[in-house]
Image (cartoon, rainbow, N blue to C red; front, side, top):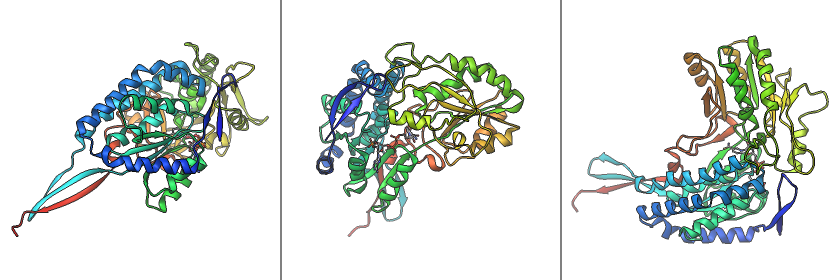
Length: 454
Ligand code: TAP
């Protein structure tokens, strides 16, 4: 079976990709298992060198990878270059890990006690369509660095950059069976990662709904799992903030990648005393977002990923929705959707509770700090958020009060490869990136060596 890969900005077919069957997935997992002993035994410095070579191969291919992503996913060329660069940087960062996977020597009577950081085995990485390159790299780079072999399933809609990354790995000298990319359906390939006993860990990024099924499936084998799931993130704007900056940047905190971002700040909570002024400032900022051909340097927002997804996003705007104002979007072919600002009045409105995953933002007022924190936390999710204030004490109090894994003050930055990333509550389980992520790809083994004479 094959899948026609569509350019979401033009609706033209780019090429077809063969879908991996359940039997082919099992065969790939068997090869990954067979490749494990040799990969685990590669000297730490040599494994590090191979990962650095892989990073260099990605670096030399950035423009090609970025153009592939523009065509396959409709990402703006600026974002797509950043995403390819992120894979390079994550590989370089974790290339420093193999020689640093130290254990501990723990004092015990009658001998020596040491711990080892052992690789888990075959790791299955399941990637969504919204950030095909970075999310793949956050899984495979630390997994490979720790001595695991990897099978990776890109989203059916967006396989092209992952397939290219597998070619670059081979060019860099990483053995073919150590890192395999298996395009296909979640219900086939992803499901085998969950069920196959040789896969010892599943790294899943995607919807909370599917994440729960993955976790339940993995429980049957006590399989390790990392989950990076949805978000309904709050951008909290206090009256003492630099309102001009808060309003000018808010569109980019939610409409980046057309809102198809787990970290999208899709709820803007504004202190009531400056609510009207904030909306006045927000309107020109939203109308100024440049929506169009993602391959053009000046474009700030591209299309949605598919016709089906556009329909889902549009379903959040029934006729009686209080739409404050909208930006622009091209007419004609492509899955376009204009940036849209809504002002729902009920806290239970789906626009305030559900992850829309499109360019729609809800703006609502709050009275004081306590209410802002309560509203921010009034969600099953807990991934990210922003706090705009000029009061350092308030910034820290609110940061500690909001139940989310990644917060930024007077900024919307969420991701740096050297800081931990992940969610509270139903936004996920475990952390990716940062100095500790490699540990999530190892088991601690404790060994006692007796020094007693025989
Ligand atoms: P999902 O529908 O959950 O799909 C994610 C991946 O899982 C795809 O590769 C999909 O395969 C696969 N999959 C689907 N059903 C499966 C099953 N039963 N067993 C194993 N794998 C299965 O999510 P999506 O719509 O692509 O992505 C959007 C979601 O991802 C949003 O909720 C977003 O917030 C979340 N997300 C979270 C983060 C972080 S870091 N927290 C980052 C990005 C996105 P197919 O290709 O067949 O669909």
